[in-house]
Image 1 (cartoon, one colour):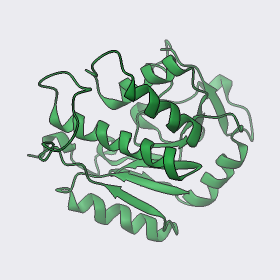
Image 2 (cartoon, helix red, strand yellow; image 1 turned 120 degrees about the horizontal axis):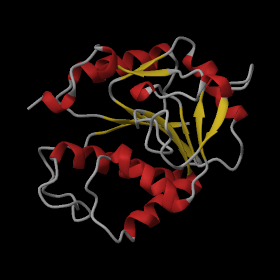
Image 3 (tube, rainbow, N blue to C red; image 1 turned 90 degrees about the vertical axis):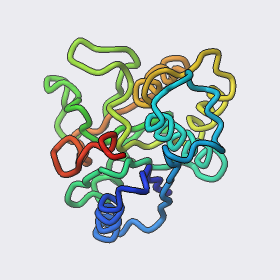
Image 4 (cartoon, rainbow, N blue to C red; image 1 turned 180 degrees about the vertical axis):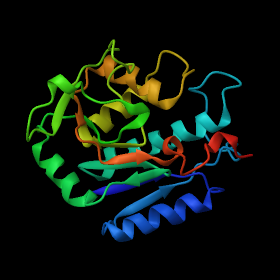
Length: 215
């Protein structure tokens, strides 16, 4: 499966770290997406509100680039942000999760971003994939998403996302993770979460400094 890594070029330590993880887990088919917040002059940012955070725009455009690549070239793609920390035996477990995933899926979230999990009482022994509703829940989250540090998008979903983006009737004024929840609702996507999760965000567990703090 093609892997896309959303990467800010100044964070060299993150790139080194994830490359070491890829080597450990035998991940070889990857692409770093390096749309720079400091070099947006040649990018189309008309879909965003005026004076929007350049860092947020760059991250959003990077995810959108991945959607376009998946829509044109791949059956599906795995998208990472550059602070991810992969679990032990990541590749074996990930393949097991993909095999359990229903054919009608649009997206699969495999990380524990913001500490979001399927409720404990809903977990079933030897079941790893759970459909997630598209609307906010009382136990947390704004809908389908679980942060966008680690998730799978299939081709039909990527095509719909690209078409949706091309025909937006509003300006984006929120981060890509929150916006993706809206896009999932508007397109009635089939979204699934994996349990147990197999990816952690290094900026959440203290391994990396939050990139917004970098100048």
